[in-house]
Structures are given as C-alpha cells and as structure tokens.
Amino acid sequence: MTRTHTNPDDNRLVLGIESSCDETAAAVVRGGRTVLSNVIASQHDLHAEYRGVVPEIASRAHAERIDKVVKLALEHAQVNLSDIDAIAMGNRPGLIGSLLVGVSAAKALAFTLSRPLVGVDHVLSHLYAGFLHRTPSADQNASTDHSNLFPALGLVVSGGHSAIYRLSSPTSSLRLGTTRDDAIGEAYDKAAALMNLPFPGGPVVDKLAQAGGPDRFDLPVSRLEPNSLDFSFSGLKTALLYTLRGVPTQRGRGGTPALDPTDANIADLCAAFQHAAVKAVALKLERAMHQNPDCVTLFVGGGVSANSLLRSTLTDLCRQSGLTLKLPAMEFCLDNAAMIAGLGHQTLTTRNWQSDPLTTSASASST
Ligand code: KG4
Ligand code: ZN
Image (cartoon, rainbow, N blue to C red; front, side, top):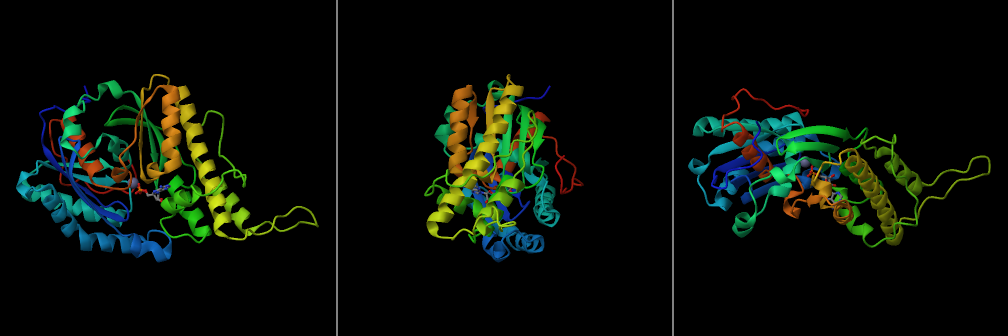
C-alpha cells in the first residue's frame, strides 16, 4: 500500500535539481517540507529579445550555471554535500537539452556520494509546492499526515502546461483534462508580445490588469463540450489580436478600427484577457468538483498560480465548495527545485529509499 505521509522524525535532507526549461535551480529540503535553501538562476534576460525560450540558449546557460547553483544551495542551507541523504532530479517533461544538464549533474552527485537518486515529474511536483514552507515553527505545527487531504483535485497552470488531475496521494495521480492548444502561461506570454509588453508577459499583464476594467472588451471564455475538463486558450489570444489590430470592413458593413495602444486601453485589454482566462479555469474546476464530489482538497501549482485574480478566484471557489485550498507560497509558484526535492522525498518514502537506477534518463514527455 502507498504511504501518504512522512514520518515526523524523518529529517532527511534531499538535494533537488531542476533544469527543465529556462530556470537553473537547486534546493535543499528537510523532511520533504522545510525548505532550507531555494536557489533559482533565471535566464529571462537571455530569452527576452526572442520573446520566448530558445532551447539551445537554455541548455548552454544551464551547463554554465549548474555547478555554481548547486554550490549556492548547499551554502544557503549551511550543509555540506556529505550531509545530503538523497538526490532528486526533475527528469521529465521539458526541453530535452535542458533536462539533460540537471539529470547529468544529479546522477554524478548520486554516484559519487553513494546516495539514492530519484527522478521526479516536473508537472506533478508543481502540485506538491503547496506543502513547502520556510520556517521551522510552521514545520512543527504542520501535520505530516497527508491522508486527510485526499482524494484531491490538482490544477497545474504554467508556461508549458494547463491540466487538471485527480490525486489519491502526493505521488499518485490521474490526469482528467489538459490544454488542446496553448498552455495558459503561454497564452499570457503571447498576448503580452502582441501588446508589445516585455517577456515573460504573465506578471506584466497581471499588474496592468489591476489598473484596468474587465468589461470594456468582450473576450471569449472557452467552454468546450459540456463535460470536458480540457482547456483551450488559442481563441482568446486570437480575439485579443483582432481587438488590437481591428477588423476590416466587409462590403461596407461591420469592421472595427485598430485599438489606439494608450496605457489606459492596454490596461483595459489586459483586464479583459485576465478575466476571460481565469473564468475559463474556474469553469473547468467547477465541472471537475461536480464530477469528483469525494475530493476534499484543491492543490494548485505552476507559474500562473502567482496570478492575483486566479488566487482570489480559487480562494472564493474553494470557500463556497468546502474544499481545502493548497496554494503555494509565491516563491514556490514558479519553477524551482524545492518542489522537486519535496516530491522526491515523498516518492523515496513510498519505496523505502530505494534508488532509481543510474541509467534513468531525461524524457521530453510526462510519464
Ligand atoms: O511554472 P513556470 O515557471 O514554468 C513552466 O513550467 O512553464 O511558469 C512560467 C509561466 C510564464 O508563462 C509566466 O508568464 C507565467 O508563468 N506567470 C504568470 C504570472 N507569473 C508568472 N502568469 C500570469 N500571472 C502571473 N502573475
Ligand atoms: Zn513549471
């Protein structure tokens, strides 16, 4: 049987390594929950001029930074390599060249230190981020028994993924729905590029949206088939494009002029975009709750879980539905290695700290 909780006396230290996209990250986590260090070297400046992540640039930057990032994670945690009990590596899904850098570093460390190695699914680790905390006092107060939180629903909203899961434990999940086109963060980034806003666009659109009104532009909320738990964000992005560029008159009828990109107009457009995107997510979650009435918790993770409107909407939704909401602290929303170390700890606990073989490799897709 799968164990769903860690031993309260389990103070083992796991070093997590993450390099699936454009963040080189390492973290040391104690007992699967207390984050002693969380070092993230972002590459945003390297990709900004391309308005998206360039895989070759990303993997080269990971290779240049990984040693220093691991060293810093140990330093910040005030531990030595010999204190580490296991190595967790984000080995799927992601950009294959990027993943390989973190995976190679993790394997080299596990081999030299003779410590167990565990490969962790990046997307599912986002759902674990709600368990992570910094302070020892929170650690003492927190229950280490997770069983009362399951079965649960999981929502991953990031630059590469938008999906809903049913979870029976932190390590056991079934995907109920996913995006049919763009991920929600990708849609935010593309919408920002159309509005000439900097990359990554999500945080910028979120900030501008708070100064605008959502009702001036009527952007579509994707619903799909009545029971579907899938997402689609490409229609919303296209509607934003037409609102910006205008629609030509056809045979003297219809048509709308291009939008004058004043600060006020762009703020209103950001607010309308954010309103439609978040409403689409809330709608699918309501369906998932209806279809899974036994679920008692909603775990949320991924970069877009930092979004102000999504956080308040999910708080309201869970309050109304009686679900416990597990939202990550802001520092654990974006890609990080603490979530890899945390879920790695859970996975190792369920199998008596038995190592994955050193032949375990990186994979571009989820398992
Ligand atoms: O989880 P993450 O760091 O990387 C992936 O696994 O994809 O997510 C990055 C995404 C980017 O698309 C970024 O624009 C988006 O998260 N993001 C936001 C916000 N902060 C980051 N989107 C909307 N609102 C935010 N506040
Ligand atoms: Zn991610």
